[in-house]
Length: 507
Ligand code: SF4
Image 1 (cartoon, rainbow, N blue to C red):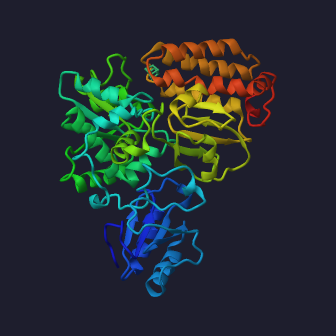
Image 2 (image 1 turned 90 degrees about the vertical axis):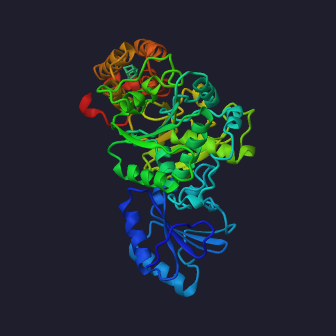
Image 3 (image 1 turned 120 degrees about the vertical axis):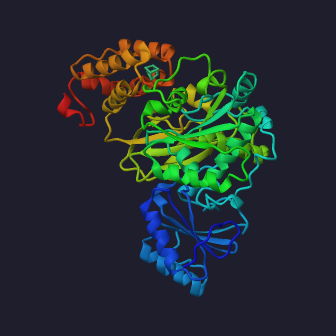
Protein backbone atom coordinates (compact mmCIF):
# COMPACT_ATOMS: atom_id res chain seq x y z
CA UNK A 1 0.00 0.00 0.00
CA UNK A 2 1.40 3.39 -0.99
CA UNK A 3 -0.37 6.39 0.46
CA UNK A 4 1.06 9.82 -0.18
CA UNK A 5 0.11 13.40 -0.65
CA UNK A 6 1.32 15.48 -3.54
CA UNK A 7 0.83 14.66 -7.18
CA UNK A 8 2.20 17.54 -9.26
CA UNK A 9 5.52 16.70 -10.88
CA UNK A 10 5.47 13.15 -9.48
CA UNK A 11 6.18 10.26 -11.85
CA UNK A 12 4.94 7.62 -11.95
CA UNK A 13 1.70 8.39 -10.12
CA UNK A 14 -1.96 7.39 -10.18
CA UNK A 15 -4.64 9.96 -9.41
CA UNK A 16 -8.22 9.11 -8.51
CA UNK A 17 -10.40 12.16 -9.12
CA UNK A 18 -13.90 12.44 -7.65
CA UNK A 19 -16.08 14.70 -5.54
CA UNK A 20 -15.54 14.57 -1.78
CA UNK A 21 -18.90 12.91 -1.21
CA UNK A 22 -18.46 10.29 -3.96
CA UNK A 23 -18.46 6.86 -2.28
CA UNK A 24 -17.47 5.27 -5.59
CA UNK A 25 -14.46 7.56 -5.71
CA UNK A 26 -13.36 6.26 -2.31
CA UNK A 27 -13.90 2.63 -3.37
CA UNK A 28 -11.83 3.07 -6.51
CA UNK A 29 -9.15 4.99 -4.59
CA UNK A 30 -8.95 2.27 -1.92
CA UNK A 31 -8.78 -0.45 -4.59
CA UNK A 32 -5.88 1.31 -6.31
CA UNK A 33 -4.05 2.04 -3.07
CA UNK A 34 -4.46 -1.50 -1.76
CA UNK A 35 -2.60 -3.06 -4.67
CA UNK A 36 -0.08 -0.27 -5.29
CA UNK A 37 3.38 -1.19 -4.16
CA UNK A 38 5.84 1.27 -5.64
CA UNK A 39 3.50 3.69 -7.42
CA UNK A 40 1.93 6.42 -5.30
CA UNK A 41 -1.86 6.82 -5.47
CA UNK A 42 -3.28 10.28 -4.78
CA UNK A 43 -6.93 11.15 -4.19
CA UNK A 44 -7.70 14.34 -6.08
CA UNK A 45 -10.91 16.37 -6.18
CA UNK A 46 -13.53 16.59 -8.92
CA UNK A 47 -12.79 17.84 -12.42
CA UNK A 48 -16.33 19.20 -12.73
CA UNK A 49 -17.40 16.48 -15.19
CA UNK A 50 -19.56 14.12 -13.14
CA UNK A 51 -20.04 11.56 -15.94
CA UNK A 52 -16.32 10.73 -15.83
CA UNK A 53 -16.18 10.16 -12.06
CA UNK A 54 -14.31 8.50 -10.60
CA UNK A 55 -11.68 9.44 -13.15
CA UNK A 56 -8.41 7.52 -12.90
CA UNK A 57 -5.35 9.26 -14.32
CA UNK A 58 -2.12 7.29 -14.73
CA UNK A 59 0.95 9.47 -15.30
CA UNK A 60 4.45 8.57 -16.32
CA UNK A 61 6.85 11.32 -17.38
CA UNK A 62 5.17 13.41 -20.03
CA UNK A 63 2.15 11.18 -20.58
CA UNK A 64 -1.13 10.68 -18.78
CA UNK A 65 -3.76 8.11 -19.61
CA UNK A 66 -7.40 8.69 -18.65
CA UNK A 67 -9.83 5.98 -17.50
CA UNK A 68 -13.40 7.13 -16.86
CA UNK A 69 -15.59 5.44 -14.23
CA UNK A 70 -13.68 2.14 -13.95
CA UNK A 71 -14.77 -0.58 -11.54
CA UNK A 72 -12.54 -1.20 -8.50
CA UNK A 73 -11.48 -4.55 -10.00
CA UNK A 74 -10.45 -2.84 -13.26
CA UNK A 75 -8.40 -0.30 -11.31
CA UNK A 76 -6.62 -3.05 -9.40
CA UNK A 77 -5.56 -4.64 -12.72
CA UNK A 78 -4.61 -1.27 -14.10
CA UNK A 79 -2.31 -0.42 -11.18
CA UNK A 80 -0.73 -3.89 -11.25
CA UNK A 81 -0.08 -3.55 -14.99
CA UNK A 82 1.39 -0.09 -14.42
CA UNK A 83 3.80 -1.47 -11.82
CA UNK A 84 4.90 -4.44 -13.92
CA UNK A 85 4.74 -3.18 -17.51
CA UNK A 86 4.75 0.62 -17.48
CA UNK A 87 2.05 3.15 -18.31
CA UNK A 88 -1.23 1.39 -19.17
CA UNK A 89 -2.71 2.62 -22.44
CA UNK A 90 -5.01 -0.26 -23.46
CA UNK A 91 -8.68 0.76 -23.15
CA UNK A 92 -7.71 4.29 -22.09
CA UNK A 93 -10.36 6.91 -22.84
CA UNK A 94 -7.61 9.41 -23.66
CA UNK A 95 -3.83 9.67 -23.76
CA UNK A 96 -2.40 13.18 -23.35
CA UNK A 97 1.20 14.38 -23.74
CA UNK A 98 2.16 17.24 -21.40
CA UNK A 99 4.86 19.05 -19.48
CA UNK A 100 5.77 16.67 -16.60
CA UNK A 101 5.63 19.59 -14.11
CA UNK A 102 2.26 20.91 -15.25
CA UNK A 103 0.07 22.07 -12.34
CA UNK A 104 -3.26 21.94 -14.15
CA UNK A 105 -5.10 19.00 -15.64
CA UNK A 106 -3.76 18.14 -19.11
CA UNK A 107 -6.77 18.43 -21.40
CA UNK A 108 -7.66 15.68 -23.90
CA UNK A 109 -8.32 16.84 -27.46
CA UNK A 110 -11.97 15.82 -27.32
CA UNK A 111 -14.66 14.82 -24.84
CA UNK A 112 -16.23 16.88 -22.06
CA UNK A 113 -12.92 17.97 -20.51
CA UNK A 114 -12.00 19.69 -23.77
CA UNK A 115 -15.00 22.03 -23.65
CA UNK A 116 -14.09 25.68 -23.05
CA UNK A 117 -10.98 26.56 -21.08
CA UNK A 118 -9.62 25.31 -17.78
CA UNK A 119 -8.24 28.32 -15.93
CA UNK A 120 -9.76 28.45 -12.43
CA UNK A 121 -10.76 24.82 -12.96
CA UNK A 122 -7.21 23.94 -14.03
CA UNK A 123 -6.03 22.41 -10.73
CA UNK A 124 -9.34 20.57 -10.13
CA UNK A 125 -8.86 16.83 -10.47
CA UNK A 126 -5.09 17.18 -10.91
CA UNK A 127 -3.63 18.57 -7.69
CA UNK A 128 -3.90 17.14 -4.21
CA UNK A 129 -6.54 19.54 -2.88
CA UNK A 130 -5.14 19.44 0.65
CA UNK A 131 -1.46 19.89 -0.11
CA UNK A 132 -0.25 23.51 0.09
CA UNK A 133 2.94 22.62 -1.79
CA UNK A 134 0.81 21.96 -4.88
CA UNK A 135 -0.55 25.50 -4.87
CA UNK A 136 1.69 28.51 -5.35
CA UNK A 137 0.04 30.82 -2.82
CA UNK A 138 0.28 34.41 -3.98
CA UNK A 139 -1.75 36.22 -1.34
CA UNK A 140 1.31 37.04 0.74
CA UNK A 141 3.31 38.56 -2.06
CA UNK A 142 1.01 40.27 -4.57
CA UNK A 143 -1.22 43.31 -4.13
CA UNK A 144 -4.77 42.56 -5.15
CA UNK A 145 -5.32 46.26 -5.89
CA UNK A 146 -4.09 45.53 -9.42
CA UNK A 147 -7.06 43.19 -9.87
CA UNK A 148 -9.44 46.03 -9.04
CA UNK A 149 -8.15 47.81 -12.15
CA UNK A 150 -8.99 44.80 -14.32
CA UNK A 151 -12.73 45.40 -13.74
CA UNK A 152 -13.49 41.83 -12.66
CA UNK A 153 -17.21 41.35 -11.92
CA UNK A 154 -18.61 39.33 -9.02
CA UNK A 155 -19.92 35.90 -9.95
CA UNK A 156 -23.01 34.03 -8.80
CA UNK A 157 -26.21 34.92 -6.94
CA UNK A 158 -24.44 34.63 -3.60
CA UNK A 159 -22.04 37.45 -4.42
CA UNK A 160 -22.89 40.89 -3.03
CA UNK A 161 -21.23 42.35 -6.13
CA UNK A 162 -22.79 39.93 -8.65
CA UNK A 163 -22.16 41.30 -12.17
CA UNK A 164 -20.68 44.48 -10.71
CA UNK A 165 -17.00 45.50 -10.49
CA UNK A 166 -15.67 43.93 -7.31
CA UNK A 167 -12.97 46.57 -6.99
CA UNK A 168 -15.66 49.17 -6.23
CA UNK A 169 -16.96 47.01 -3.38
CA UNK A 170 -13.47 46.71 -1.94
CA UNK A 171 -12.94 50.47 -2.07
CA UNK A 172 -16.31 51.05 -0.39
CA UNK A 173 -15.35 48.65 2.41
CA UNK A 174 -11.94 50.31 2.75
CA UNK A 175 -13.56 53.72 2.95
CA UNK A 176 -16.07 52.73 5.68
CA UNK A 177 -15.29 53.07 9.37
CA UNK A 178 -15.13 49.82 11.34
CA UNK A 179 -13.25 46.55 11.30
CA UNK A 180 -13.74 44.93 7.89
CA UNK A 181 -14.84 41.32 7.44
CA UNK A 182 -14.66 39.04 4.41
CA UNK A 183 -17.40 36.44 3.87
CA UNK A 184 -17.01 33.56 1.43
CA UNK A 185 -20.59 32.73 0.52
CA UNK A 186 -20.70 29.08 -0.54
CA UNK A 187 -24.20 28.40 0.79
CA UNK A 188 -26.29 26.99 -2.06
CA UNK A 189 -29.23 24.67 -1.51
CA UNK A 190 -30.12 24.44 -5.20
CA UNK A 191 -28.30 21.49 -6.74
CA UNK A 192 -28.09 23.06 -10.22
CA UNK A 193 -25.06 25.34 -9.80
CA UNK A 194 -21.99 23.27 -8.95
CA UNK A 195 -19.08 25.58 -9.77
CA UNK A 196 -18.45 26.79 -6.22
CA UNK A 197 -18.62 23.27 -4.89
CA UNK A 198 -16.27 21.99 -7.60
CA UNK A 199 -13.69 24.66 -6.72
CA UNK A 200 -13.95 24.07 -2.97
CA UNK A 201 -13.65 20.31 -3.41
CA UNK A 202 -11.07 20.34 -6.21
CA UNK A 203 -8.85 23.26 -5.30
CA UNK A 204 -9.88 24.80 -1.97
CA UNK A 205 -6.45 26.31 -1.44
CA UNK A 206 -6.82 28.40 -4.63
CA UNK A 207 -10.06 29.82 -3.24
CA UNK A 208 -8.47 30.43 0.17
CA UNK A 209 -5.53 32.16 -1.50
CA UNK A 210 -7.91 34.54 -3.32
CA UNK A 211 -9.79 35.12 -0.07
CA UNK A 212 -6.59 35.95 1.81
CA UNK A 213 -5.50 38.37 -0.92
CA UNK A 214 -8.79 40.28 -0.69
CA UNK A 215 -8.71 40.21 3.13
CA UNK A 216 -5.22 41.71 3.07
CA UNK A 217 -6.35 44.44 0.69
CA UNK A 218 -9.39 45.53 2.71
CA UNK A 219 -7.44 45.04 5.95
CA UNK A 220 -9.77 42.35 7.31
CA UNK A 221 -8.55 40.15 10.12
CA UNK A 222 -11.78 38.16 10.17
CA UNK A 223 -12.85 35.85 7.37
CA UNK A 224 -15.93 33.62 7.49
CA UNK A 225 -16.50 30.72 5.12
CA UNK A 226 -20.24 30.07 4.97
CA UNK A 227 -21.36 26.59 3.86
CA UNK A 228 -24.55 24.49 3.99
CA UNK A 229 -25.22 22.74 7.28
CA UNK A 230 -26.22 19.49 5.56
CA UNK A 231 -23.02 19.27 3.51
CA UNK A 232 -20.89 17.87 6.30
CA UNK A 233 -18.40 16.17 3.96
CA UNK A 234 -17.59 19.45 2.22
CA UNK A 235 -17.32 21.17 5.61
CA UNK A 236 -14.79 18.53 6.75
CA UNK A 237 -12.84 18.80 3.50
CA UNK A 238 -12.62 22.59 3.63
CA UNK A 239 -11.68 22.48 7.32
CA UNK A 240 -8.82 20.11 6.48
CA UNK A 241 -7.71 22.47 3.68
CA UNK A 242 -7.74 25.43 6.09
CA UNK A 243 -5.73 23.46 8.66
CA UNK A 244 -3.23 22.35 6.02
CA UNK A 245 -2.53 25.92 4.91
CA UNK A 246 -2.99 27.89 8.12
CA UNK A 247 0.73 28.49 8.59
CA UNK A 248 1.02 29.95 5.12
CA UNK A 249 -2.13 31.98 4.72
CA UNK A 250 -2.05 35.55 6.04
CA UNK A 251 -5.68 35.24 7.19
CA UNK A 252 -7.28 31.98 8.35
CA UNK A 253 -11.04 31.64 7.83
CA UNK A 254 -13.56 30.46 10.35
CA UNK A 255 -16.01 27.90 8.90
CA UNK A 256 -19.69 28.42 9.70
CA UNK A 257 -22.60 26.33 8.41
CA UNK A 258 -25.94 27.94 7.59
CA UNK A 259 -29.44 26.74 6.75
CA UNK A 260 -30.10 24.59 3.73
CA UNK A 261 -32.65 27.01 2.29
CA UNK A 262 -32.56 28.76 -1.08
CA UNK A 263 -32.91 32.25 0.37
CA UNK A 264 -30.08 31.62 2.86
CA UNK A 265 -27.70 31.80 -0.11
CA UNK A 266 -28.62 35.41 -0.92
CA UNK A 267 -25.70 37.61 0.19
CA UNK A 268 -27.48 39.71 2.80
CA UNK A 269 -29.51 36.71 4.01
CA UNK A 270 -26.13 35.04 4.55
CA UNK A 271 -25.22 37.86 6.92
CA UNK A 272 -28.49 37.39 8.80
CA UNK A 273 -27.78 33.66 9.12
CA UNK A 274 -24.22 34.32 10.30
CA UNK A 275 -25.58 36.69 12.96
CA UNK A 276 -27.87 33.90 14.16
CA UNK A 277 -31.19 35.48 13.13
CA UNK A 278 -34.25 33.25 13.62
CA UNK A 279 -35.82 34.31 10.32
CA UNK A 280 -33.52 34.35 7.32
CA UNK A 281 -34.48 37.41 5.26
CA UNK A 282 -32.48 39.39 2.72
CA UNK A 283 -31.80 42.90 4.00
CA UNK A 284 -33.03 46.13 2.49
CA UNK A 285 -30.29 47.90 0.53
CA UNK A 286 -28.75 50.47 0.69
CA UNK A 287 -26.69 50.31 2.79
CA UNK A 288 -24.73 47.64 1.00
CA UNK A 289 -22.83 45.00 2.98
CA UNK A 290 -19.61 46.89 2.21
CA UNK A 291 -21.02 49.81 4.22
CA UNK A 292 -23.04 47.93 6.86
CA UNK A 293 -22.50 44.20 6.79
CA UNK A 294 -21.85 41.52 9.40
CA UNK A 295 -22.74 43.04 12.80
CA UNK A 296 -22.68 46.43 11.08
CA UNK A 297 -19.04 46.07 10.02
CA UNK A 298 -17.86 46.80 6.45
CA UNK A 299 -18.17 43.39 4.78
CA UNK A 300 -17.02 42.01 1.45
CA UNK A 301 -19.19 39.07 0.35
CA UNK A 302 -18.05 37.04 -2.64
CA UNK A 303 -18.57 33.49 -3.88
CA UNK A 304 -15.73 30.94 -4.16
CA UNK A 305 -15.92 31.51 -7.95
CA UNK A 306 -15.13 35.18 -7.55
CA UNK A 307 -12.23 34.51 -5.18
CA UNK A 308 -10.81 31.86 -7.54
CA UNK A 309 -10.94 34.40 -10.37
CA UNK A 310 -9.20 36.99 -8.20
CA UNK A 311 -6.38 34.56 -7.57
CA UNK A 312 -6.18 33.66 -11.24
CA UNK A 313 -6.01 37.35 -12.16
CA UNK A 314 -3.22 37.85 -9.60
CA UNK A 315 -1.19 34.97 -11.00
CA UNK A 316 -1.98 35.46 -14.67
CA UNK A 317 -2.76 39.15 -15.25
CA UNK A 318 -1.96 38.76 -18.95
CA UNK A 319 -5.06 36.56 -19.41
CA UNK A 320 -7.40 39.42 -18.38
CA UNK A 321 -8.22 42.28 -20.71
CA UNK A 322 -9.36 45.40 -18.83
CA UNK A 323 -11.11 46.54 -22.03
CA UNK A 324 -13.52 43.59 -21.77
CA UNK A 325 -16.84 44.54 -20.23
CA UNK A 326 -16.75 41.21 -18.37
CA UNK A 327 -13.08 40.19 -18.11
CA UNK A 328 -12.06 36.59 -17.51
CA UNK A 329 -14.03 33.40 -17.85
CA UNK A 330 -17.45 32.25 -16.65
CA UNK A 331 -18.00 28.92 -14.90
CA UNK A 332 -21.16 27.23 -16.12
CA UNK A 333 -22.79 24.04 -14.85
CA UNK A 334 -24.66 22.15 -17.54
CA UNK A 335 -27.50 20.15 -16.08
CA UNK A 336 -31.15 19.21 -16.68
CA UNK A 337 -32.10 16.28 -18.90
CA UNK A 338 -28.52 15.08 -19.26
CA UNK A 339 -26.53 11.99 -18.28
CA UNK A 340 -24.69 13.85 -15.50
CA UNK A 341 -24.00 17.48 -14.63
CA UNK A 342 -20.82 19.06 -15.98
CA UNK A 343 -19.14 22.28 -14.89
CA UNK A 344 -17.12 23.95 -17.63
CA UNK A 345 -15.34 27.27 -18.01
CA UNK A 346 -16.15 29.49 -20.97
CA UNK A 347 -14.12 32.48 -22.17
CA UNK A 348 -15.96 35.72 -22.94
CA UNK A 349 -15.46 34.99 -26.65
CA UNK A 350 -17.16 31.59 -26.32
CA UNK A 351 -20.80 30.66 -26.68
CA UNK A 352 -23.26 28.96 -24.36
CA UNK A 353 -23.97 26.52 -27.18
CA UNK A 354 -20.52 24.98 -26.52
CA UNK A 355 -21.84 23.42 -23.32
CA UNK A 356 -23.78 20.80 -25.27
CA UNK A 357 -20.49 18.98 -25.94
CA UNK A 358 -19.90 18.49 -22.21
CA UNK A 359 -22.93 16.24 -21.63
CA UNK A 360 -25.13 13.65 -23.29
CA UNK A 361 -28.76 14.72 -23.48
CA UNK A 362 -31.65 12.39 -22.69
CA UNK A 363 -33.97 13.10 -25.61
CA UNK A 364 -33.96 15.98 -28.09
CA UNK A 365 -33.26 19.54 -27.02
CA UNK A 366 -36.32 21.73 -26.69
CA UNK A 367 -35.26 24.64 -24.50
CA UNK A 368 -32.80 25.69 -21.84
CA UNK A 369 -33.19 27.57 -18.61
CA UNK A 370 -30.11 29.77 -18.37
CA UNK A 371 -29.08 31.25 -15.03
CA UNK A 372 -30.40 28.95 -12.32
CA UNK A 373 -33.91 28.16 -11.11
CA UNK A 374 -35.05 31.72 -11.94
CA UNK A 375 -33.08 31.97 -15.17
CA UNK A 376 -34.42 32.73 -18.61
CA UNK A 377 -36.00 30.14 -20.90
CA UNK A 378 -34.65 30.02 -24.42
CA UNK A 379 -34.11 27.68 -27.34
CA UNK A 380 -31.26 29.86 -28.67
CA UNK A 381 -27.97 29.16 -26.94
CA UNK A 382 -25.64 31.00 -29.27
CA UNK A 383 -25.05 33.72 -26.68
CA UNK A 384 -21.65 34.78 -25.26
CA UNK A 385 -21.43 33.89 -21.54
CA UNK A 386 -20.76 37.48 -20.43
CA UNK A 387 -22.99 39.30 -17.94
CA UNK A 388 -23.93 41.92 -20.49
CA UNK A 389 -24.83 39.48 -23.30
CA UNK A 390 -26.81 37.25 -20.96
CA UNK A 391 -28.69 40.21 -19.53
CA UNK A 392 -29.45 41.56 -23.02
CA UNK A 393 -30.89 38.15 -23.94
CA UNK A 394 -33.08 38.10 -20.77
CA UNK A 395 -31.04 35.22 -19.38
CA UNK A 396 -29.51 34.80 -15.93
CA UNK A 397 -25.86 34.97 -14.94
CA UNK A 398 -25.85 32.45 -12.09
CA UNK A 399 -23.70 30.02 -14.06
CA UNK A 400 -26.22 27.31 -14.96
CA UNK A 401 -27.46 26.05 -18.31
CA UNK A 402 -30.26 23.56 -17.79
CA UNK A 403 -30.90 21.62 -20.99
CA UNK A 404 -34.51 20.47 -21.20
CA UNK A 405 -35.81 17.85 -23.61
CA UNK A 406 -38.82 17.91 -25.90
CA UNK A 407 -40.71 15.83 -23.34
CA UNK A 408 -40.88 18.91 -21.13
CA UNK A 409 -43.89 21.17 -21.13
CA UNK A 410 -42.94 24.87 -21.05
CA UNK A 411 -46.01 25.79 -18.96
CA UNK A 412 -45.43 23.05 -16.37
CA UNK A 413 -41.72 23.86 -16.21
CA UNK A 414 -42.25 27.52 -15.38
CA UNK A 415 -45.22 26.71 -13.12
CA UNK A 416 -42.95 24.60 -10.90
CA UNK A 417 -40.50 27.51 -10.63
CA UNK A 418 -43.22 30.02 -9.77
CA UNK A 419 -44.50 27.66 -7.05
CA UNK A 420 -40.97 27.26 -5.73
CA UNK A 421 -40.60 31.08 -5.63
CA UNK A 422 -43.81 31.40 -3.64
CA UNK A 423 -42.50 29.02 -0.97
CA UNK A 424 -38.78 29.91 -1.04
CA UNK A 425 -39.14 33.68 -0.67
CA UNK A 426 -38.69 35.22 2.78
CA UNK A 427 -41.97 37.14 2.83
CA UNK A 428 -40.15 40.33 3.76
CA UNK A 429 -41.34 42.50 0.85
CA UNK A 430 -44.77 42.69 -0.78
CA UNK A 431 -43.63 42.19 -4.42
CA UNK A 432 -41.71 39.08 -3.41
CA UNK A 433 -44.32 37.66 -1.05
CA UNK A 434 -47.57 38.53 -2.82
CA UNK A 435 -46.14 38.73 -6.35
CA UNK A 436 -44.93 35.13 -6.34
CA UNK A 437 -48.36 33.98 -5.07
CA UNK A 438 -50.15 35.94 -7.80
CA UNK A 439 -47.79 34.62 -10.43
CA UNK A 440 -48.50 31.04 -9.36
CA UNK A 441 -52.23 31.76 -9.42
CA UNK A 442 -52.11 33.34 -12.89
CA UNK A 443 -50.33 30.25 -14.19
CA UNK A 444 -52.88 27.99 -12.50
CA UNK A 445 -55.69 29.92 -14.22
CA UNK A 446 -54.25 29.02 -17.62
CA UNK A 447 -55.28 25.43 -16.94
CA UNK A 448 -58.80 26.70 -16.30
CA UNK A 449 -58.94 28.50 -19.65
CA UNK A 450 -57.74 32.03 -18.75
CA UNK A 451 -54.39 33.07 -20.21
CA UNK A 452 -53.98 36.67 -18.99
CA UNK A 453 -50.86 37.62 -20.91
CA UNK A 454 -50.89 41.34 -20.07
CA UNK A 455 -51.49 40.72 -16.38
CA UNK A 456 -48.58 38.25 -16.20
CA UNK A 457 -46.25 40.64 -17.99
CA UNK A 458 -47.30 43.62 -15.86
CA UNK A 459 -46.83 41.60 -12.66
CA UNK A 460 -43.40 40.53 -13.91
CA UNK A 461 -42.45 44.17 -14.55
CA UNK A 462 -43.54 45.27 -11.07
CA UNK A 463 -41.74 42.39 -9.34
CA UNK A 464 -38.58 43.02 -11.33
CA UNK A 465 -38.52 46.71 -10.44
CA UNK A 466 -39.74 46.74 -6.85
CA UNK A 467 -38.67 43.49 -5.17
CA UNK A 468 -36.23 43.91 -2.34
CA UNK A 469 -33.85 41.23 -3.60
CA UNK A 470 -33.00 39.18 -6.65
CA UNK A 471 -35.24 36.30 -5.63
CA UNK A 472 -38.42 38.32 -6.18
CA UNK A 473 -36.91 40.32 -9.03
CA UNK A 474 -35.94 37.20 -10.98
CA UNK A 475 -38.84 34.91 -10.07
CA UNK A 476 -41.02 36.00 -13.05
CA UNK A 477 -38.20 35.58 -15.57
CA UNK A 478 -38.77 31.89 -16.44
CA UNK A 479 -42.45 32.66 -17.05
CA UNK A 480 -42.07 35.80 -19.18
CA UNK A 481 -39.20 34.42 -21.27
CA UNK A 482 -41.08 31.15 -21.86
CA UNK A 483 -44.09 33.21 -22.98
CA UNK A 484 -41.82 35.07 -25.45
CA UNK A 485 -40.87 31.83 -27.13
CA UNK A 486 -43.60 29.33 -26.40
CA UNK A 487 -46.75 31.44 -26.33
CA UNK A 488 -48.69 28.96 -28.54
CA UNK A 489 -48.04 26.32 -25.88
CA UNK A 490 -49.57 28.57 -23.21
CA UNK A 491 -52.60 29.20 -25.47
CA UNK A 492 -52.97 25.47 -26.11
CA UNK A 493 -53.22 24.89 -22.34
CA UNK A 494 -55.88 27.57 -22.07
CA UNK A 495 -57.70 25.61 -24.79
CA UNK A 496 -57.45 22.43 -22.71
CA UNK A 497 -54.53 20.79 -24.50
CA UNK A 498 -50.92 20.12 -23.48
CA UNK A 499 -48.81 19.64 -26.66
CA UNK A 500 -46.22 17.55 -24.83
CA UNK A 501 -48.91 15.46 -23.06
CA UNK A 502 -47.47 16.04 -19.62
CA UNK A 503 -50.25 18.10 -18.01
CA UNK A 504 -53.24 15.91 -18.81
CA UNK A 505 -54.33 15.39 -15.22
CA UNK A 506 -54.51 19.15 -14.69
CA UNK A 507 -56.56 19.89 -17.81
S1 SF4 B 1 -37.94 39.40 -2.95
FE1 SF4 B 1 -38.67 37.60 -1.83
S2 SF4 B 1 -36.86 36.78 -0.80
FE2 SF4 B 1 -36.37 38.88 -1.47
S3 SF4 B 1 -36.87 40.14 0.31
FE3 SF4 B 1 -38.68 40.12 -0.98
S4 SF4 B 1 -39.94 38.43 -0.18
FE4 SF4 B 1 -37.86 38.17 0.64
